Image (cartoon, rainbow, N blue to C red; front, side, top):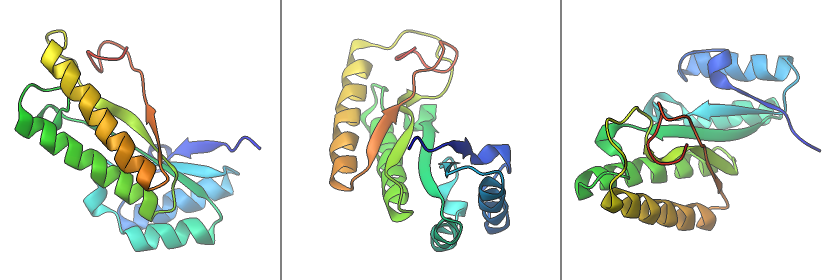
Length: 158
């Protein structure tokens, strides 16, 4: 079986409890097998409610996110890299807690247009961060997906 999914942003612009209910109901009603939840604002999501609704409607879940310049794991600034790594770990943790097995997105740098190429140190930082998050995800049974985007969305993988 090749499950078909849809991104939650098709149905709603946030993951408040009311929006989450709408997203999951619409996803099931439209005949999809799974829904992708963007974790750009995960603290707004009611994890218990979301997990219960996914189970109630028989839907699988995958999660995704991108990073900002303030939490860019390809930065040369160790504190910025640490913030990015913390967000990635939070994303993997939320994915696992929802019963998901896939966490993807632009996990290797900011989801933004850079004004310069990635530096050698930034590249090393990104590689090390992805290695660390891959180990963290593997321990939780979550597979990572690195989204390759155009040059206006990243300066590392495009």
